[in-house]
Image 1 (cartoon, rainbow, N blue to C red):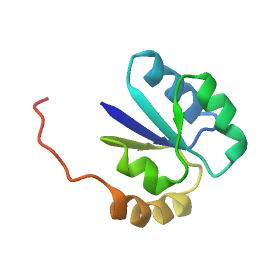
Image 2 (cartoon, rainbow, N blue to C red):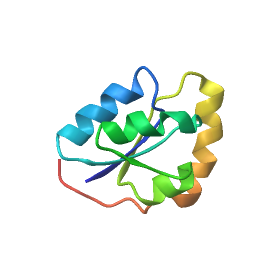
Image 3 (cartoon, rainbow, N blue to C red):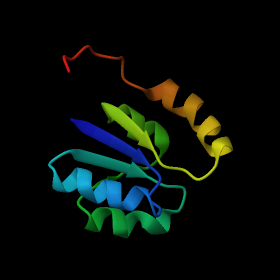
Length: 89
C-alpha cells in the first residue's frame, strides 16, 4: 500500500518513520522543503507537490496545524486522487 503524508512536522515525522519502517511505501510533501532530508532519512520519498503525492497514494494522511490549511488542501487532493477501490477490512 502506498501512503501519502502531508505535513512533516512534530506529528508527521514520527508517523512517517513508523509507516516506512513497517514496509509501507511512504510519499511525503511539506510546504517547508527544508524537511526533505529528515523525511528521506526516515525512509520515505519526497513528493514535488500535493498533487503528485495524491496521484501516487492509496491513502493520504494530513498532519497540518490549522484548519484553513486543511481546507486549502482538499481541492488539490480531490483533483489528483485515485478512484476509490473496494478492499475487504
